[in-house]
Length: 229
Image (cartoon, rainbow, N blue to C red; front, side):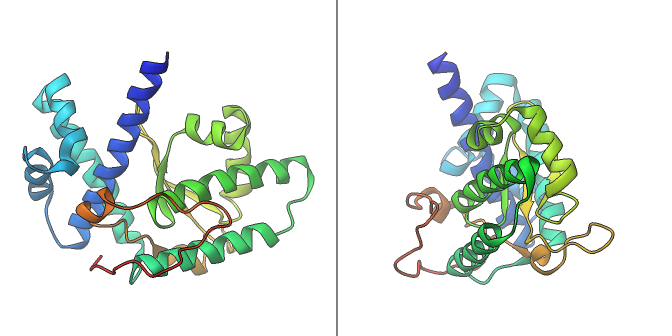
């Protein structure tokens, strides 16, 4: 059981890195073919997850996986705006946490929604911005709720009020792609304000050598080196 959980955790971590690289290539004006060559190149550390899929399940399976990641990254980048730096991303997330913690969450369902939203905020801080990846299992465990309860509060509280958007549904071990809003939704339930922000989702090398994730109550003591997103 421990080995299986370790493998699943490694796969989810690998997918997050792959998604970050895909977002970087999209923003740089690259193509899916360029992303494929990058990920499958034996010397590129960030492509380890895709190469593992190719080795384990054949090249065609890996190519299909890369195309799905590319489609998700393209949709996310097209619908959002790039943050200027990682420091800017930290500031956006800090403002989001303040807004979340000072918002009234009434009733049992509201308090449950707050726990789920805090879980997503932790994932977003790990990812480096509002755009992040998380599976139902991860989120339910982080929030301490059942998956059924998780779905209910998403559909009845978090999505309608503009707190959380699912940009792409995950498949198998791949987590869904999520985007944190600021709880400002118009009468159609469409998020306003922070809905046009997105994470820098650091370029491959910096993402792989980044330090420990920012957790609740902690802020960076110095401004990390900026890079072109």
